[in-house]
Amino acid sequence: MIASSFEYFAPTSVDEALSLLSEHGDDAKILAGGHSLIPAMKLRLAEPAVLIDIQRVEGLKGISESDGKLVIGALATHHELESSDLVNRTLPILAQTAGEIGDVQVRNKGTIGGSLSHADPAADWPATILALDADLKIVGSGGERVVKATDFFEELYTTALEADEILTEIHVSIPDGNTTGTYLKLHQVASGFALTGVAAVLSKSGDVCENIAVGITGVSDVPYRASEVESALAGRALTADNIAAAAEKAADGVDILEDIHASEAYRSNLAKVYTRRAIEGAAS
Amino acid sequence: MATTQINTTINGEDYTHEVEPRLLLVHYLREVAGLTGTHVGCETSLCGACTAIVDGQAVKTCTMLAVQADGADITTIEGLAQDGELHPIQEGFWERHGLQCGFCTPGMIVAAHQLLERNPSPTEEEIRHGLEGNFCRCTGYQHIVDAVQYAAEKMQG
Image 1 (cartoon, rainbow over the protein chains, first blue to last red):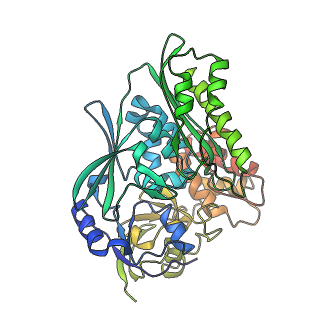
Image 2: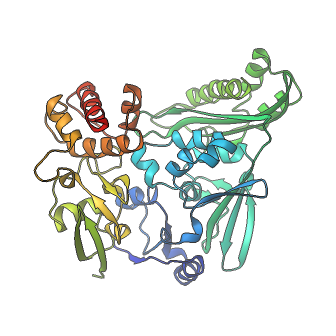
């Protein structure tokens, strides 16, 4: 399997990458770790005329803490997120999510920014990024802007990124010690992608749920916040019955995917079961 | 046909070639550098037969372009034995019968190398998890786990 021919550029700064992107417009694709784009190019599902490889842009790397936020460079690999002491200490659900992606080799090379920008409906990151209410920093020829995770995913494989823009950083507020989270998924056995992936993040006072956010991937064309589940539990006791009743709403109002791996009815059931288990995990 | 020059170090030797940007790293290793120990299996990032270590990270070289490896330090299965002595992981596969047909073995050994570098005394479960990106269609994995345990013990000295 050989990709179509393309012209290759390896810029070393964001500015250089942006100017290549505005020069080549829709003909160009950004290459990060390549673990979504290269498979698509080998199958000729993607045939960009120009490939802009940003892996040598140092400013897009690294994970740091700043003003109570975790700042994740778009080129941070899944392995870096999985193994980072800072991430494990401040937002362990991110490390947990990273560890559920693909396999060791995929996690060594694939990046969080690449995964989010590609917006595969069965990718893992979107569920957790949504549940953590992350801010996505984007730069383009028109300057810099911040998009909320809830506004980022628009359609199948389509995000708020314009053709001349690059996702540069993911910002996540570091919660107080009272907040816990769990990401839980059912792996498609061959590919490792999420047939359903649910991230639940909550804080409680005694047994009462104060705040809760639930992000779900793999179930619909677009990852989503299960707002019906959230409103059914916020302010209520985190009993097994209440959690189960709220989780029943996990697929309410959602256009559910159907493919060779799972029927609509099966996916809908998975969404409910994994939502219940993820909330139970976060609450325990 | 436009080409790009890449410089790599593979198993301690320097290589410089002009390559087409669409050339995959696995094809570069096998057909340009002549190192055929790295195998082409599924070609879809699943089976791990093409695993090599690029700048300290085990990667599936069927899902990487050779141009992405410009400047990289690469280790393939050919680079593990030193002075005619098998690497302890290779010895483990020999001693514990960790292969039948042998097709997955180079990728399996290179992935095990990464595993033991990060976790020198893994549990059986950690070995199985660490090798989840590598498929073997012959052995049922038990002897592969035994081989990695043998290597872990030997490397711990």
